[in-house]
Length: 273
Length: 306
Image 1: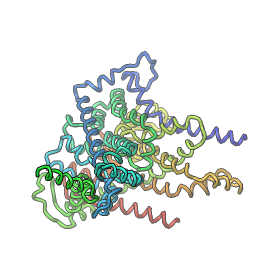
Image 2: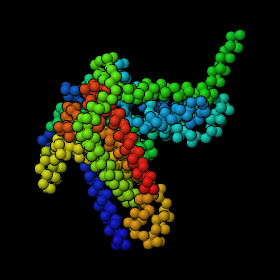
Image 3: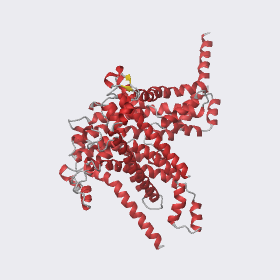
Image 4: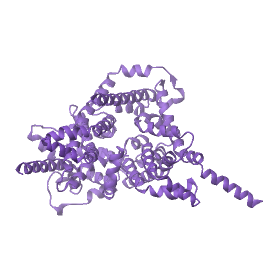
C-alpha cells in the first residue's frame, strides 16, 4: 500500500512538472499580452492590466492587421470548401464504384500522400508566377483545394458504408450519383468534420506557402504578418504576445469545441493538415 | 415528338448518373485535373529542371547541362554542412520527442485526477502554428525573462540561444520537440489502450514487477506504434522550415551565420530566394532521395529486429 502511494506521488509530481513546463509558455504569453511594457517579467496586479497591446496590434499604421485577418479567413474558408467537395467525390468513386482506371487513381492518391510538399514547391512557385498569381488569393487556395491524405481518410469511411444503403436509395429512384449526395454524403458528417478540422488547422497555421507566394504585405496572412511584426517590434514583447494570442485564438476555440474528434482525427491520420 | 426527345435525353442523363464508369470518372475528374496541374506536372518539372541551367528571370533560355547542378552541389561544402545540420536536428529531436511522448501517454493513461486537463495541455502546442510557438520562445529566451533567471542559476549568462551559433540548432530542435510530443502522446495513448488487460494479469501471476511488465509487455506491444511515431517525426523534423525562418529576423534564412542552414533552407535559398530554378531543383531531388533512404533504412532496421 505504501509502495503504491509512493508511485502515485511520483506520478503526480512528474505530471505536474511536465504540465507546468508545457503550460508555462502559454501562461506567459497570455499574461504578457495584458501588461504594459514596463511590467513585462514582473508580477503586476490585475488593476494594471490593459487591452492597449491588442488595440495597438490591430490599429498600428505600420501594417494592416484587419486585412491580414480577412485574408486568412478567405484563404482558410476557400480551402476547406474545396476539400469538402472535391475529396469526398473522389473518395466515393474509389470506395463504392467500379470502373476502369480506378486502380490507377487509387495508386495516385497513395503515392502522392508520401511526397513532401518541398519536392514540388519550386515548380509550383514558377507555375503560380507564370499565371500571374503571385500576391493573390488564388495562389494560396487553388493548388490546395484537394488533399490526397483526406481522400484516403474519407475512402476508408465510405468503404464501411453498407452497400444496401445505396441499393435502397436506388430502389427509391435515386441514381448512384444522387445516392451519394443525398445518402452517403450526409452519413459521412463526422468524417467530414474531422477532415475540416485538420484542414482548418493546417491552412490557418501554414507559413511555407503564404510566405513563398506572397511578398506584398497587403496579401499577408496572419501567421506571415505575425512573423513580420515580431521582426519589426522585437523589443515590444507585449505587442507581439497580443499578436500571438489573436492569431492562435481561432484554432484554440475550434480545438475546445471539437476536442475529441480533433484528437481522434490526428491520431488516425498522423498529420496536422 | 418533343416530349419523346425530352424523355430520351433524360434517360440518357439518368443512365450516365447511375453508371459506375460515368460517375466514377466524373467524381474523380476535379481531383485529377488539380492533381495533374498542381502535383504531377510540378513533380516532373523538379526532375527536369534539375538537369537545366534555369533562372527564374529567363526561363525560356533554360538549357540542358546534364549533371552539372548535382556536381556543383556535391562539391559545395555548404551543402554537406546543411545535411549535417538536418541530421543533427533529427538525432536530437526524434528520440527525445518519442521518449517524452511515451512518458506523457503513460502518465495520462493512469487513473489520475485531472488527466484530461493534462492531455489538453500537452496537446495544445501541436495545434498552434510553428511561427507563434517560435515567437513565444524567442520572447522567453530574451534577456531579463524568468527563463534567463532560471538558467543563470546554472551559470548560463546568456540564453539567447536563437542568436547563438552554438545553440541555435538545439533551439530549433527544442521547438520541434515542444510541438511534436503532444502528437506522439495521442498516438501512444491509443496504443496503450489496446494492450490486452489479461497480459498484465498473467504477468502479475508470474511475479513480474511493474518495470518488468512495462519492459516485456508494454514495449513489445507498442513496437509498431513506435515505428510509426519515429518515422513521422523523422520525416517532419527533416522538413523543418517555419521555425528556422522565424528565428532569424527579417526573413534571412539559416541565421545566425548559417548555423541553422539545413537541406530545406539550402534548396529554398537557391531555388526561391536566388531564383536559381535548376540548381534549387537539383537540391530538392537530393533532399527527396535522402528522405526516401532514411525511411527505407528505418523500415529495414525494424524488420530485422523482428
